[in-house]
Amino acid sequence: GNARSARRALDNVRRTCNGGGVQVARVSPENYAECRDTLVLRFKAEGEVVRKVCEFMDGARRGEAFACAACGVRCGILLILPACGHLCCAECVTPTTCACPACAVPLPAPTYRRCTRCARTRQTRRC
Image (tube, rainbow, N blue to C red):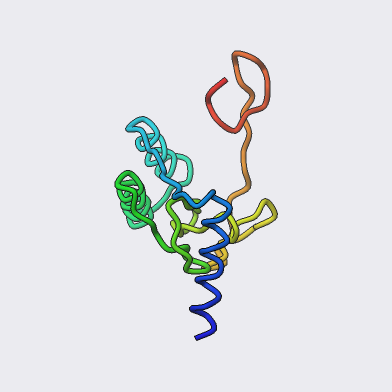
């Protein structure tokens, strides 16, 4: 039907924007552990959320595509929403998104830390 045609058209647009290629996520062991630890320690994620995210990272390492929880389009790279564990595409989660587009759970506000080495405000630990 129409939904299938629209989804196919959107997939074609994404392929075109990718130069016809496929996005492949690279997850190093360090990034894998950091993501898992951040979910547990910083966001107090439940076991099911952590399991779902680890399953996604394992699949991403194998080049698998997963469906966006909001629109259903299959992507190799999705955003992890720490409050609920949903995986959503960048088109469904914009800079103004305040809640999960799949379940409406509010997203935590970003916290920024000042780098001890350069005194700049950063969201990551690297300088």
